[in-house]
Image (cartoon, rainbow over all chains, first blue to last red; front, side, top):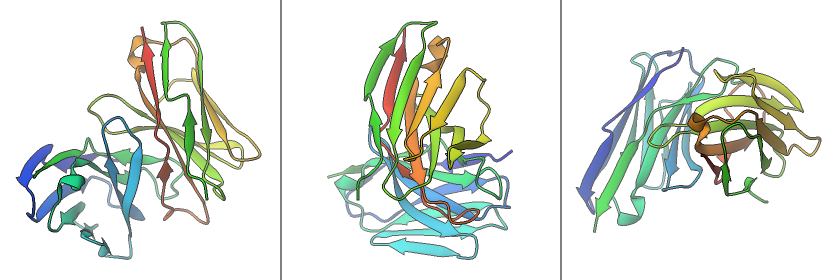
Length: 114
Length: 115
């Protein structure tokens, strides 16, 4: 059974800092890993999807890496802004075929202070 | 291209009642999955529908059931509501080309409160 853990649970930093969010998963037989953003009381927005054949994926100020052998992924946010304040969730598939959905971590609640 | 829409946005029910939540998939998507998110937790997988058939299910009892229609919209039905069913219910759609690697697009969710 896939288990996903995210560290830290919460993070508060001043605007402009670069930061790293961590995600670990127990079943490394995954074909991808996804990072999502969730604003309070809202749905999830997909940020990055890293396929198992890739080591990292970039979108603007966001960079996500994947190390299947160690069961870890990191989300790097450069030059943080107050608008980045949200909960960030990582999710790994429950099986190779994808029909058994994703297992999510509990998320990292991020606050960027102006 | 329209996104994933869910209705209603909020719902209040009493214990023992039944509820139906609705989801319209993003245009062109043929797969829909449902998740339950309790306060302070990550979403938990309920089930997935592909071409109108359930093809994956999480650890939820049979009183959680669903449907997918020919236009790929979907319903989540919950019978005999319990207090612990209070949560944000999220629908996600994707286009399944092959096993894996499809991005999920989520709706804004339905907040269900069971009193």
